[in-house]
Length: 186
Image 1 (cartoon, rainbow, N blue to C red):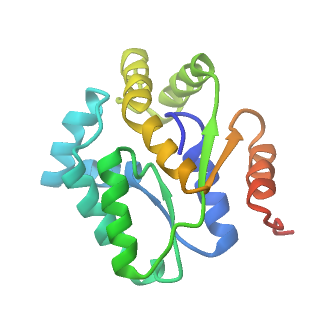
Image 2: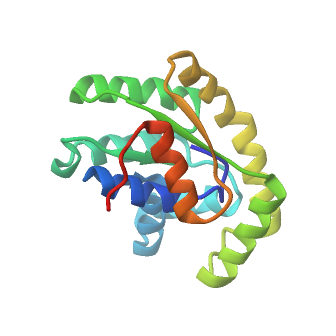
């Protein structure tokens, strides 16, 4: 977890590969559906362009379907989910049904202005229409309003690890492994 631009996607891929599990990114799922022009993609695009979260019922269904796939049976890493308290409850139900358990919640922290600069640079490189300064700042606000409260829920469960998300990718990865007490791959 962490605000938009904190490096969740980058770190999710590295950490998931280390554990041999899929990194499940709601953002990637949304972008795939948008690029394919699916009805779900068109609906998701409206929310993404406005800097708003895609409604829970749509997101929950996509995540539920994804964690039911065979490659997620030994475990999975979620990137960008849950984002609301309602999604926390839904995820609890999903993993109880599948027999999984939530081992850790890694929260990447970073300076908001640095994140805005980082996302504006990414928008230029990747040509992402959803990354204008106004939309980025709105996404930061939405994160603060909707997502930060659920971190407290996980903190009460004793599974939150806050990690400084700024700096070189390898340095951030090392911080994550140190917090999770994981021996990095050589």
